[in-house]
Length: 89
Image (tube, rainbow, N blue to C red; front, side):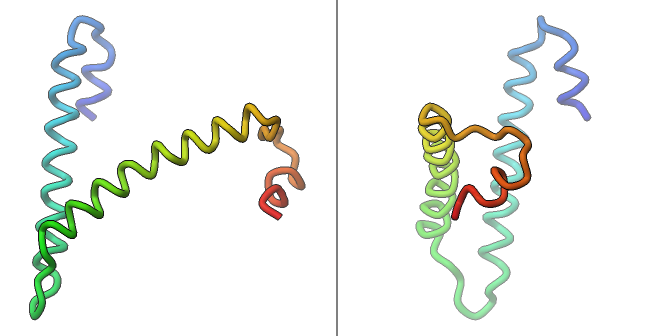
């Protein structure tokens, strides 16, 4: 909700960036804490959780790179049922 409020004012781009970064850090911290506490008998190492977090974040960039390569090769989505659902085959 606040992100939409700040996005209407172009002079507050820095405030928007700080707010969204803070929200991302808080939500990431909450998820890391949840995954650490969910396993009562054998707690996960924070190193493994952070490495999974970084790997998951980097995979989105790899997918975007792959989608860009496919688009340049001519595989574009044209809203045709057969093209969308049977392209992987």
